[in-house]
Every structure is written in structure tokens, then in C-alpha cells.
Image (cartoon, rainbow over all chains, first blue to last red; front, side, top):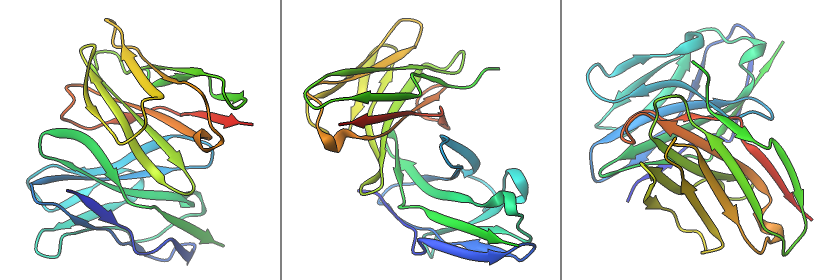
Length: 113
Length: 112
């Protein structure tokens, strides 16, 4: 069985400061890892994904994430956040024979001026 | 290329009624998955359809069903609605069913 843990339910940060949103996963098979962002009253937008290859993955809006197999982590980072980055961020895993996404509980990134 | 579209965007129903939600995938995508999002349970997988066949199913009661048409458009149906069915229902499409899923804006269902 697969699972995803997002330890931080909310992360407050000041504008232009760096941020890291944590994600840990558990799986008995090789996984694909994703970060999605959800703005209020909207669906999920793909930020970035790790399928294979380089463990440092760059996504949209200046976000990046690093896949760490030994620590089973896939933390999301941005060196300088903007007010417009305020949203809910979801880490997800899929793998094995199914394309089903297993989501974490989400982290609300609250950027303050 | 147009994204995933879902209709309607908002829906209000009463307990005991049934509802049908629609999803049109990105052109060329053959896999459609449905997810339920609630504050209490988060994002949960409902089912996946590929080439008109249900390929995977989540842990939901039989009141939740779906289908996919030959043009890859999908519908999901919920019968005998309960208050707990109030949620944002998200549809996602992917090219082959084993690659990245792209989400629609969702249908907000409120059951009174």
C-alpha cells in the first residue's frame, strides 16, 4: 500500500522569503511523485513531477523538488515566494499497476506581506 | 489545447436525489479518473475509466458509479444522495492512464 504524509498543515511565510513544504511517502513499489497546487475554488494544477532520472525536478512558477529515495521524501522548495503563491499544495504518489493518485492532506502556504 | 472541462460547476441537491456529473478530457486523452475532495477526508480516488472500461475503483459504496463514452467523455452518477456526499468532485485525464493526470476545475456538489 502507498501513503503520503505532509507534516505541515499550514506554513506561514513572509513575501520574498524562501519556503520548503515537506512530503514523505511510503511505498513497496517504484513510485511516481507529484506536487499539485490548488487555488481557492479551483481544481488542481500540476506544479512538477518526478518519474525517473535526475532527482532534482524543476516545475512551474519557480518551484523545485528533490526526490530522496533513502529518506523517502519529495520536499518542495521555492527560493523567494510571492503573495500570489498563497494556495493549498498537495503531494501525491502513484505507482505499480495503477495510475491512481494517493494524496497527502495538503499544506496551506500563507504568504504575508 | 483545451483543458479538462467539467459541468456543471455547482450543483445543489436534496437528500435521496440522484445526480450526474460530466467530464470532458483533454483531446486525445483516453483515461479519465474521478476524485472526491472533502475537508474531512481530503482527496480520495473514486474510479478510473480507460477506453470505456472501468479499470480501477476506490473504496466507495455502490451508490457511486460512472461510465465512459467512445469519445472518452465520462460521467459519474451518485444515487440516493446523503449529506456526506457534499464535496468537490474532480475529474482528471491522462493520455494512456499510466502518465501524468491533468485536473479539471471540479463540480461543487451541495446536498441539503
